[in-house]
Image 1 (cartoon, rainbow, N blue to C red):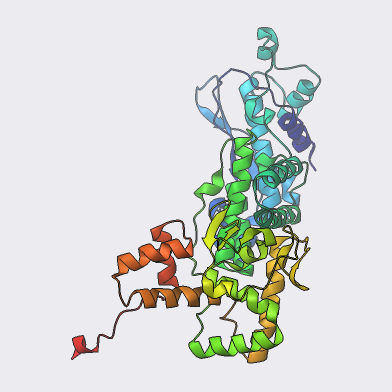
Image 2 (spheres, rainbow, N blue to C red; image 1 turned 120 degrees about the vertical axis):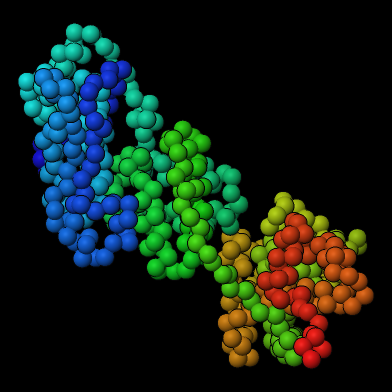
Length: 446
């Protein structure tokens, strides 16, 4: 690599700011004649042509004789040996920031009678520009660089912080997405010791585009949310000044929902489960009768069930602990639990009651896989899952109550049963599962 880049890099790593303002233009980056902000949208041929050209940093300085800004020599720093856009842009940004530091502290190509490289070499030896020496200006550390933290340190800080504030299930997902982003950075020539400030909004957009191409809009949006939380944590800890992920758009995404079961399908499934998988059968009854989510059922311990007062207590999605009644129809199916320890989990792979110390998400996956075996046996498609029982139950409740009460009364009663946080959330859920359908309107079309 060119010596001028190495010298500029030293400046970048040992930033000094001076309160002087000279007659120069802000350094800019030339990227082969294309708008770097639209790089991902450019045809491959255009990208290749741009990379064949020399990229560089350029600036202008006011000529003391004419009083006009004059374009100075382009600074390439050997970066054109790199054949990819990410590396070139990252190195050019370092050079740009470093050059601006030198101009701020007094470098003048007309006064100093030395090249930029010579100026930096003397500067590194403590021999600053004549102006700086004469004024005996004491260098101060630039706030932005003082806050600079390496990529590796930043990831460690965020994960350490999030492990204390997120639930175990949420943290596992967050950590997975953040680490995938870190691996992408490494694959695209970012080094662990590089400053976290080297990562730009454009870099995150490029990564999100790669997630979209390999998965789905929903996963891309979820990744955006977690990266936004990642950079917000850095901002809250004064590591960065701005969380630019908030400015990245959310893509339209249509989530896939499990279908409700028909009465015939319900009967067939329950008959099979009673005979072949009694533990899974009772697990599903808690989803169907108590309208719990599968992961909430996995959280239930023996002590969470008060069979005398007919209540259960569970950590739900939208609140720390939620109390729900146990309807009599479910109470009749719960076996005697008096012989179990209160800290035993209600459902385990070995049956009702016992120890099962693994992550919640793995518990849910276990029962999901068990139900998939049932679906395969009964030749059901992929559109039905454990959530289908919850959808089916809520749909049935709504239709039965709607026979004797107006919609707003039905929804008010249903809100207490389902446990949705708001009426808006319940209404959206009912629309998503097609629980609310109009009456036959044939007469209106006659």
